[in-house]
Amino acid sequence: MKLVSSTSLSIALIAAATTGGSIFGVAEASSGLERRIVGGSAVGSSSAAEYSFVANILATTDGKSAYACTGALIAPNVVLVAASCVANSLGSKALETSQVVVGQGSSNPAAGLALVAKGGKSVDMTKALSSGYVAPQSVTLHPGYNSIAFTDNIAVLVLAQPLTTQTNAGAKLIVKPSATTGATYAAVGWGVTSATNATAYAQTLRQLPLTVADKGACTEIWAPYDNLTNSLCLQPTDSAKANVCTGDGLLVKTSSTGGSVAVAGLLNIVADEGEVPAYQCAGSSGKVDFFTTFANYVSWLTEVTPLDKAAFVSTDSFDYHNVEAGGQAGSGNDGSASESGESSLGDDESSSSSSSGGDLDDEDLTSVESSTDSGAAGLFASALTASVSAVVLAASSLLF
Image (cartoon, rainbow, N blue to C red; front, side, top):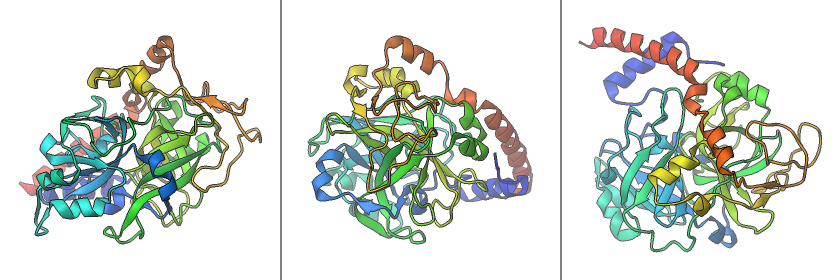
């Protein structure tokens, strides 16, 4: 695993301490580049209904600037999103409900951000409430979320009222997505059209084809991935031109049976051999994208939302070598054109042409959920936290 050097980490921590920014840019509200799909293609009007579950989230960590993220409605009043989107700038606790609003996926986030701006010096989130946005009743981060170790990067927003413009009751979740190398997915999110201009917002929802990357290569970049049961590593077809970016993006797959779109993951981090996470998401080759998957969180979701498992777990079948979002289908490790995802939580075996979306029984869920993301990444978290503590002490002696 490649990490930033201790000198670089020291500089980053001192800068964070003096400016109030985040260490790795994961929660940096002022930079739209960390939160966007760069490039990709627009979701056409003919597909808009299929993606009506996509939520447009506006948030502010400091009251001075706002940013947009992408979430997934799994019910008219329940939204899943990466915890890094709705955590404070230190990643230590959830934003207040007054700091977040949620809108319909088809709305333009640039317009929403313009609504809440007040002369460019502060934001007023209530200004969006009269234009189709809804305030959350609660913002809940997973208790294992760690913004330094990138663990359990998932959060739930329960809305004060349903999104009245929403035509889709909510997307179902694929809790057993295929992890076979070459399996195809798509990512959807709000994008910018430039890798260097954070204000060049696309006017429509963006999509991008992704394929599952080689597990060994992913582990070389981020060592904890080797043992995680709630993470999936994918790669863009051409990372030098387009990719998802840390803090934004839903991993989706279209059912091979009913044609509906289900959600397979939330973007956690983008990384490459030089940086975890990568400072830039596109513009050079070798990027891989780590998504948080849902098998570990089904019981937690039933505890923090009014939903039961049947309301949000998909039972559809999926062909993981059908082309998604204009991409090219890959092949599995054994050269076959398709595979089963029925037992694919970290399993690279290939067998059949389609897979269940993951109607896990209670025994399966108990087994999977007993293994936590934070446990697998514990060594990395402990080592990095020790370095952080030492540097913060050094920074304190310099600042005071």
